[in-house]
Image 1 (cartoon, rainbow, N blue to C red):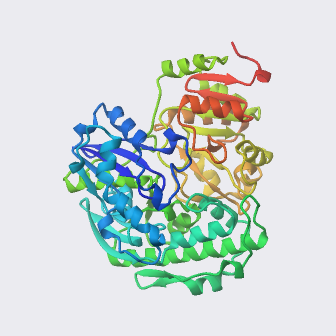
Image 2: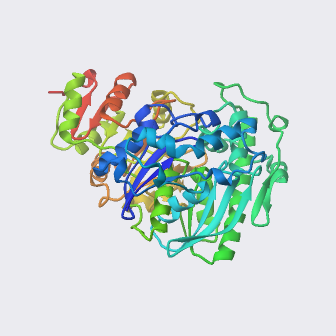
Length: 546
């Protein structure tokens, strides 16, 4: 069967296509519209559909909307409880009404679509399916936590033989995600957008407010409670655009530690109830790499797997996978996050010619890039299909030498973002355990933090965070031969088997997706070299172009 999954109701609108149980394509609307997160998460925007992402998914498979057997929409308006605390007040009815009208909106967005094929999938079940049905193991426990779904914020359960069984949920207004969003806003950042900044800031503080926070945020049976917190009683609100101070870092560290403690207790309850050795996770909370590592290192499960598009974008994939499972179609596990758009070499060269830039086609782009990195150049790396999810995983990346501490500030300047933000290492899988520990290895999706071995911290200071950790991406040569060859060539030149890897974008902009996006980013930011497929574009001062 041909099943399209759609996420549209909150933020990060996305589409995914599953054919005969196998994942064919998945993409976020922001990569096409160039609007960060696709839209703001307000009730008034719930009518907007990921029209371009969905159309591309269909085109990638060579089918039209009328060929679809089913469409999964990752929200069920029938489950909304009007007036429930935690909703968007009097405007919540708009979101619910727009969700009910989704079949008509999708028909307008995708000409030829039969609106009768649209099926509503519970939001947190779509999250659960996006993880458990794409995981590298079969039967498993599943934990979903985010801001909110229809009327809940948390779902725990298990999958056996592709079928989901719920064991616990948490009704609103109690929500770990909304609590974290409230803190994000108090710190002057954008809620439902900048929560990763809060996680990074926590490393600079001490959890001296933990006991007080835990009075309001704690487990309660199979769920939890998140009472109202007077953030100003801990630290004053930060004006947007200003960086938080030490007291804000301490508050953030306290909330982060409390979140981790609650998740560990919930995981223990799930394990006791299900007896599974494997745990799959999704929801916005599952993008908290620090919490994920504590679950891996201290929790009861042998393996913890997080779906790389664990936020709301991933519910598009989950809705499609859940319907496929309901129809008796179960495909294999997700083999990579490179599910978005890709271009042929001819298309890339045409883009370069259209842009009227000087370029070259070296014998081996991996060797050229490794040489530039060894010379401390910043490289934009555009290769293969784009990633589904928020992490750059060697397809749309900015690369740099990890051995120069100044490159952290340099890259944050290039991207136009706060200086407390870390950058991550990309490392050859076979070398990772020499340098990194505590987090799971391999770690291909950059969703866990790892402790950097003391003898390596001075060798890779640009990617070693203030707390001695790094958010690692391991690279397997069998799965990513070009990236692995580049890493190997860099190690031959420097003795370091890792490079800095951060997303190819600038602050407030979605990750680069198309060749045009890449050329615009290269032209507007102080990047030394662009590796666009097999082609190389250099700054004129570097010379060497033909």
